[in-house]
Each structure stands twice: as structure tokens, then as C-alpha cells.
Amino acid sequence: MPTADCGMSKVLATAPLITPNIHIIPLAEADLAGLEQLFDEQCGEWLELLGWDYSGPSRLIRDVVREKELSGFVAVAGAATIGFAFYVVEAERCSIGDIYIAKPWRSSGADRQLAVALLQKIDSMPRLRRLESQSVNIENHEIYSTFEAYGFRRFDRNYMMIQAADWQAKIVAPEANPAPHIFLRPWEDEDFGQAARVIRDSYIGTLDSDINNQYCSEEGCADLLAVLTEHLWCGHFLRHLSRVAIDRTTRRMIGVLIASRISPGVGHISQISVRPSHQGQGIGRHLIQVALADFFDLGFRLVSLAVTRENANALHLYETCGFRTVHAFPVFYLNK
Image (cartoon, rainbow, N blue to C red; front, top):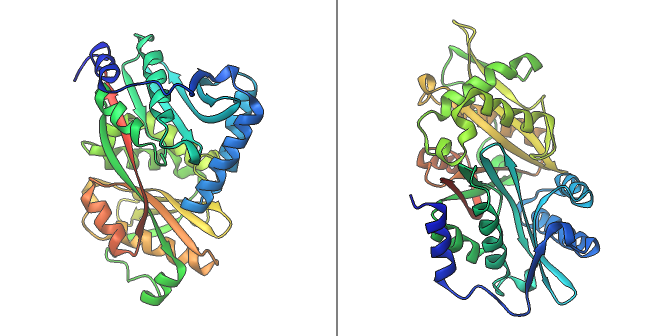
């Protein structure tokens, strides 16, 4: 893996960096009214493309921007604000957040200029040891090549959906429990600790634990689970539709599915994990089928999820459950 300096040299050498009429300025210096228009456009595109009401998380981002407490950059052309990018640093880890470009400017190179500005800033922080970009990207093609030139590893993710009509046309009710020694029950608050351990165990040695190193520890999985169950970033947590799988003999939790609502009539499976010792028994499929039946019985019209494309087993499972890819985007990581 190249050093940061070597990676930055490759980025700067690959192609012309500057589009003369586009300028990059710090996020703290941005025109707030122009940014508001971009945030509104982003929310509209998320809803149209992904069925996701992003207004809740967007409000949180806007609040931090107004307080000038979010680090990042803005692309401007004349008096117009045409793009933004931000990042968050926690100890030795930098998470690159949303990078969004207004539709008319997506072939202008603005995304590349924002990416270079981010990477140059990151190079000035030598304490960083881990860089990640996990956010949903929309048509940021020049960012992808810029990150790869810097040395990031790239993996593609599929955002998948199933419609109520397609489900109901094929499946009247969930198949019988394939593992009679396992039973499902709704989520309870006391499940949090065990669920974090199930998630950690399910990702040990997997590609996804390389992409997101929070999956490598119980503490990191607990942080992720808190985001899913206590915050708006992945929708509104639906405890009555979330399920845990319990071994009847040991009373041990061996699987978990976290359900949320991301917009009216649209549900999302934000996490599904089964302990390695119980994988291959149809428990994950049963969790999904029960969740879909619950969603659609309650009148939801769509359910979505996201999966790393290289995770062939999970991708096959979701496809055979009826999910179809509606959007694909890359994620990146780099250990410096």
C-alpha cells in the first residue's frame, strides 16, 4: 500500500485538476443559502432514487454547518454553490462523508476537485491511520478514480429493493422455520449487548470487516447498533418489526435483524447477522421472509437493503428473496 505522500503524488499527476470557473473553498466560508439549495436537491434525489427520506439526517448536517463545526469543502462556480464534501475525524480514523454535486455540474470535474482538496487536507494530518468513504455516492465518477489513484481499496455496493406486489405475487406466507431448534421473537431493549456480539461474530474474517473496521470489535459493533436503534441516520428504528433468533436449547441469541422506516411506506433492513456456527441453516432467509411479511402486512409498499457486491452469498440470498438492485455505488478504505 502506498504512503500518503506517494498516493497524493499519483493523484496530482494523473490529469488536469482545475476547471478554471470552479473554485474550492472551506465549508465554513460557504454561502448558507446556496448550501441549503444543494441539501434540498440531495434530499429530493435520495427520495426519488432510493425511496429514502434523507431530510432528518440532512437537518442534523445543516445544523452543524450553520455552527461552522463541520470540516469540509464547497465547490462554487461564480455565485453558484455547486457541490460539497465533508469529513469527520475520530482519533486516528477519518470518515469521508457525503460528496454531492448538483446535477448540471456532474461532468465538470467539480467532484474531482473536491476529492483532491479532501485528500490534501488529510495529508496534513499525519496522525491518521485509517481512512474510509462509506457514504452513498451518486454519479461521482471522477472521485472514484481519484481515490483509487491515492491508494484506496474499492468495493462496490448494491442498493436493493423489493416491491410489495412482487412479494405477494410469489409468496403468500413465510416458509416454515428451517431450523426448529431456533425461534424468532421481537426485539427487546435487553438484546442490545448480545446483538452487538452476534454482529461482531458474523463479520470476523469477512470482507466487510476490512471495509468498515467497526465490525472488527464488539465496541465498534455496539456503536453501529446504537446508530441503527437510537438515531436517524438509518431511518426510524422499528422495534416491533426487528427480530432476534434464539437457540431453544442454550437460550443464546444466534441471529438478529434490524428493521427501520426510511420514508412513508418504505422499510429498510439495516442489519442482518447470523453467528457463523449457525450459518447455512436457512436462518437468515427465514429472518428476511418474516420481516418482509410483517412489512407488507402493515401496508409498506417497498423494502430496501444494501450489500457489498463481492459478498456473493449474501447477494444471492437477497436476490432469491426477491430483491433487485436499483443503484450501485463504490465504498473505499485505506490503512495508512
